[in-house]
Length: 81
Image (cartoon, rainbow, N blue to C red; front, side, top):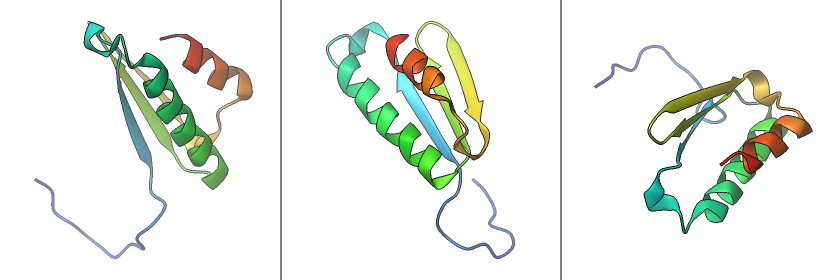
């Protein structure tokens, strides 16, 4: 539950990307990588804040303000599943 307060323009708010890296995703890892990469590139282009929550038996969170993610960070993210 939340209460909407104030007036804000609809549109380009922050993104939250949740990635299931558990064993049940073993046959869909490449597909998950592709979706995440696409969303990260969109956040970068639109200068949107983005949080990535990766979970399995543990949880890792990465945040990037205004989509400021480097090419090397993109590569590391997509190859570290």
